Length: 468
Image (cartoon, rainbow, N blue to C red; front, side, top):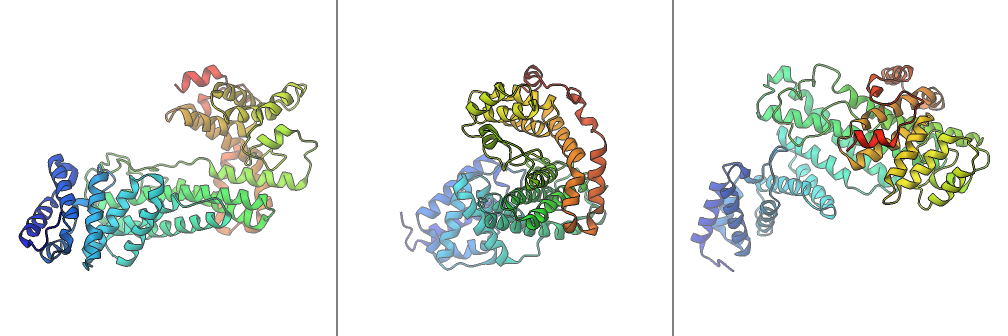
């Protein structure tokens, strides 16, 4: 369908979009639905080629795609808006408001796209936001968010790819950290109970920074494991310490008065993550990775069976080989467990449990063996139990306690030798972090009271009852 030179029709379409642009799209389902129809009509009729249409939409602020995290976002609306924006650009419209609209549309569309479409949409959004170089706080927030989410879907197979992800996350971190001082609650006098621009941007920036620090902890720990497996101790130690620093910085975000108000009656937290001191124990991963690498370097492993070669966890601080994914390990692990004569019960139970966890329909057997290993104080078993429970239940109350016990055991037994190994890479500014970790190593946290006493098995019955 072509409108040809019917400028009157183009003016009607443009006038409708301009009028429908005023309310928040989801505030009126009928407006959103009919706006979608007009967007589709404009695209199908090639209205973007008509001067009357171009003139009005070049100046439009496109509020209909100016979402926030607590908004519901329509994939169809965003898709048709992007189609129309692209058509306008292809017809020579290059206003700043249109460029910002395209950046925002690509960003929000990326958040609800399938996995293959996310990376190109976030990457294009970052490019457009960068070109705008806006001083507007919400635009700067969206640029940081776009970089953070782009990093989350970038490939991470090689060390080079992982370094690229870390660089993007570091850039997002800098942007959040530059923005947040401007949004200090004491300076802006924002009420935490409203949806004002300042309150939203501040809350979302804290969330973004917190999530970015968690992501940095993960990528640095994983890179440390790869570098140490290659024998590059210097780079591996640097990466391990960066992981520990990231986790510590994230935990400190909420230890002062500055951000403790975020959860208290704040209406803008919907759909925002990471608004509290939390991690997946990446700091303990880093210590365990270094401890295991040092053990391997000393070469005191003794004879190894096929089970251990296949099923050792690459981050196990007590590992005696590099480790692997545990594929095809059930047969060897069952045989070796049966013939071990009651020796090294914790290690054999862990290896068998990890092997069961790799296949379908053997979850109970996996949990049972991991629980036995936990009863033998085998540190890695607590992490794997937490992981397996979270896979099946997003609200298992025992999972955080298991993770906290894992951190305690790793720090208790391996922090001091790991720090000694990494001494040449430790900075003077690491003093507070090290002091906090040493405190964690001194006593088991009260959060583990939900678990059986250390040294007692964690039974399958207990796990199933607590984590339905």
